[in-house]
Length: 253
Image 1: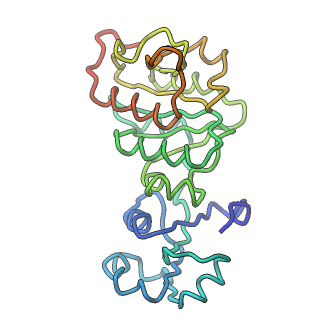
Image 2: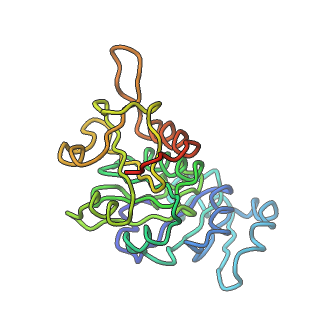
């Protein structure tokens, strides 16, 4: 159940709770390997369990046994071990998106709550893919999956190699990079979107590197005087909502 217990185990992850299990059962990007269910929950989950492939074992146990296996009282009583079906190449993932597409590119997001919130926003506003730099935490960590309400299991994502040129990758695939910063040159209300738009976000505090901001179209969200900071997941929700419904600009960048 601890993240370090799964590091290096061929992409395995733990999914927790009924909502997440329901998403995992219908995901085309991930599949269940096995399930551990509190015996008292089995009957209520019959609809979901019927969709689980026959070769996936489902273990039912009393609550005391389940708590002992997990290592702490797990009141949800629903766990699944899952695995990724494929680990896509970032360029190939972008190339497979349609002519009008929205992408979320993340730099240095190390907080699992924020990662889960970012994926939840991505799914809500039709993001076609999420790109993670080498410093981002794992969106398939148990807490990140739970906070995303399973969105990280159905939203395609790819991780860049250390030192990879994120903006060069986006430009090569026809995406206009929109980098969020309190010092952004364009306000969100003034922003129209290119057909292929990539929202680039950095970690709270340090934000995006100056070298990256110098190469991207910078955008800011106006706020009350004396305040210029939003949670990164909140920022993503505001910006993605705007872009999801914005008209395409006449001369896309």
